[in-house]
Structure formats: structure tokens, C-alpha cells
Length: 96
Length: 421
Image (cartoon, rainbow over all chains, first blue to last red; front, side, top):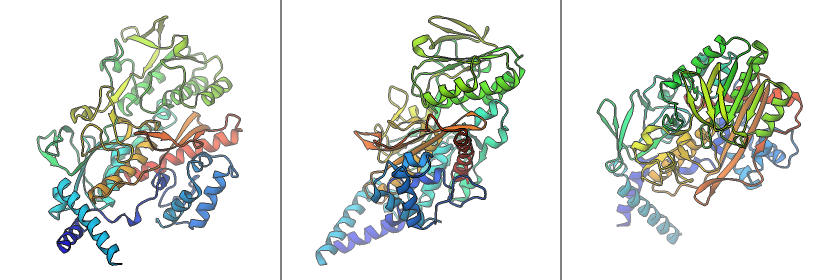
């Protein structure tokens, strides 16, 4: 019984979408609306995908504290807790 | 350990049972099918994101290319060519999406299939509607499809954009341009005010004896203090904004005389731009996902329709609470919706999302302003995250305004590349 159910579950896993392991944490999938995933020469908005997580988190936390120059990012960073920012940074860092 | 293993197995079994009941295609071992209707910022983004989730995705869009509304105000005043606004679907196809160039004419929600203009049908496990807006030609007396050929709306980019541009180019110096701005909700809340700004810039630099009158059905609007401050500085005596409380609401129009009438008087225009009230694109009503407001109530976690299970609505057509009807919002919603659909098809509960909106407006070619917001589900809608979001500083120096104009162009290049490849 359990084995049959597990087999069915595995069949679903095989047929259905990829696992949720690489799912974007809340808010993270919005970033690529402005920050080009592939990067682009001469872009005014910096490429962040694939950058070190610590660097991304530090920048976001500075924006959140209002310490960096005012752009849209100071207004956006205030919508996330420190833990949420670190989760976003880790996910962005893993994207190429 | 044993307990944990059994626990996990029973969870999996439960998920499998749920998935098998809801999604027969999945249970049969074929890839789950998702149909996306509408190839704009929302639909094209969602199709690509769903395809990357490993799903079998068909995008239904009757046009061979999409013409973007963002930056179309710059086209109207000759700052930009129309070709920079057009995007084809080759990049979407390269992601693995099957893009079919036809219209969806109906949805059979019970049988889970979309009926196409050609008469054929597309079965789906999940359907995404991203139909954008339809202009309401029954809402403003005198304004119908024929009137729009004389008094362009230019609120769907394309031929209408170029019609308004030609009318402005043909106008003699000393003419009066009149804009009619609708009540909320409508596509692109700051759009009419960016357009007013750029038309004023065009008149100031090309036809300086002319005037622009903006008749508004509202008293308050997006980025209001920033726009009004810029208008006083850049376009004094040229641009006049008449809010609702000063009699700004246009009650009827007469295309024969190019007259826009309010309850307080008639305004004869040399060139008139009438932006009428709007509603969700037609397929939304045909699918039964639009309510009496003409827009589509959705669950703020999954963007699934509150009226028809299995159908998700994103972009301008959706009632997204505090989230505005913008291209950025449609793209952000598309990615969240795609992840939610993938989770649902795995038999999982979609995680609570957080969404972002960023929107730039040009007040002049080198003068940009922005609004940003962060949103989360609350009380069944998407609500502002308190303490976040807001507009550009009111006292920013010119270098910041120039920087935001650069960011606006950069944003356009990035998002169109993300959406269309």
C-alpha cells in the first residue's frame, strides 16, 4: 500500500514540474525586472545575479537602513526583514 | 527515523492522490499542460517561467509581435521610433513554449479547454489569462471605435500611438491639445501624467504658443506632487491640469467638432487624446472570470480566479489590490503565478509570495521620477508592506532626475529582454 503510494508519488514527481528546492524565496523573482540576469555592457542598473550572497545582502541591508544613496532600492529593501534579505541574496547569488 | 520516513511517505501519498484527482494528465505520466492566453508582459513572462518549470506550455496570441505601452509616450512626441516598441515571440519559443498565432474565443472551464478562433481546442490542466485591457466604448457618451479614429486614445500601443503622433505633428503652433483622463482603475496609473508632461515638452520645444489642457476625472493621482512640482518648473502657463473637483471630469465627447464636454463647459480641441474607462480583455468575461466591475478577482497567493477554479489571471486584468496595473507588476505576478502553478501541479500549497513594483515616468527626456512598492497577501488582496515603497524625493537635484531617466531606459531594455528573450 505504502509502496504503491510512493510509486505513484514518484511518478508524479517525474512527470510534473521540477522540485521546489530551487524555488525563489518571497520577493526574489521580482528582481530580474530591473537587474538583467545575463548582465549587459553599459547597464546603469547593476547585474546582481551570480554575485556573492554576502555582497548582495550587505547592499540590501545598507539600503534598508537608509545609508545608501536614494534610488528605488531604499524603498524596496524596507519591505523585507534581514532574514528575508539574506534568503533573497542567497538565491540571487545561485542564479546565472 | 522510521517515523519520519513514514511521515514523509504519507505526505507524498497524499500529494499524489490530490494531484491525481485534480490533474489527470499528470497522473497518466504525461507532462502537465498549461495554456497561457495573451502575449504581453504578463503572458509572455508567465509562459517562459512555466516552461522553465518543466511544464508543457502553449501561448495563444493573435499578433505576430507585441507593441509595448511603456515608452510609447516618447513615441507620440517623436523622441523614439515605433520599431523600438515591437517584440516578436522567437525568444519565447526558444524557451520551449509553443506559441500559436491565433485568438482564444472561448473557455470551457468544466472540460478544461480553450477554444481557438480556428475552431480547434487546447486542453489544459491549468489556464493563465493575461488579456490586458479592453477600452470601454460604452462608458463615455460619444466615444466609440469610430470616435477613436478622430480622438485617439493611444492607450493600446500601435496604430493609435502613431495616429496621435501624426495629429500633434500636423497641428499648427498656437493650437490647443486636450487630454481626457479616466477615473480609477485603469492601465498604468501615472501614464496619463507622463504623457501630459511629454506633450508639454513637445509643445514647449516645437510649438511654444500652444496649450495643453488635462481634464481629469480624479483629484488625486500617482506621483502627483512630483508631477505638479515638475510642471510648475518646466511648463508654466503651458500645461493646465483640471482635477475632478474643479470640473475636470469629461462627461461626453463630440468627434465631429473635437469637443470634450464637462458638466461645466465645452472644450474645443485642435488635437484631443481621450483615454476612456477600461475593463479586463474580452476573454476574461467569456471565461467567466470577470466580475461586475469588469475586472478579475483573484487569490493573491496563486492568482487563481475566485470565480473559476483552474484559471489564473495576471496583469492589468486582475484585481490585485494595492498593486498597480503596470508592466513591471504583470511580469512580477507572472513569475509568482508560474511558481504557484508548478507547486499546485506537484500537489503542494504555493508559498506566500512577496511582490515588487517599480515604475518610472519621464517628465522630460532627461527628467525621470519613480514609484516603488512591495506587496504581500492580506485580507484576500495584495496589500502594501508598511514602511516600504514610495516615490522619488521631492527635492532631488537634477542629477538624480537625469539618473532616473537613465534607469527608466535601462529598465525597459532589461524587462523586454526578460519577457521576450
